Image (cartoon, rainbow, N blue to C red):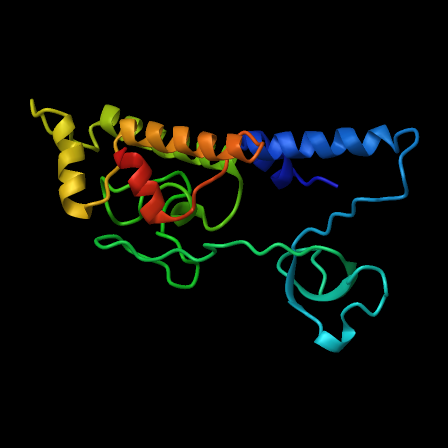
Length: 224
């Protein structure tokens, strides 16, 4: 059942609306002809916290299925144990880190903001991504999140709240400055080199791409 707040939330968020529409569509279709007895069960606001003791694992005798302890993380969530779990995935980077010069909410792991991208109490400072909203969403969510933050910048420029410095400096100096500060700045040409290297490695393994995760390897590829 949807509340008025839920409908407002869906209307304001295209990614959430797409997920909701997809789930509704699949639920209305029913089982496909010839489908096996597998079912998809969604448990919202329920977070797995740990596997049960090692002695309990594989007790079902069917390929190492396990029992997982879980706890409610919101309305409608469940606390207790879930049986017959065949696969558990762990998310990384769940807690943000402070950024020098910006306020930080240690408990939530985010930079306090107005929900759109403006940092609270810091005029002219903006935030996007997980530091803005916490560890949630997918690539599409990040796209919308970044667009909202960019819109805030545009609105503040148009209203005069954000003063843009008039300068005739070469824009390429921004990259030079960033490179001098971090030592690891990657140019667009460097990104294209990384892209080509990932596709080359993937092709050798019979797949479209193989993601590189080693920073040193990424920087080496960018320098080629």
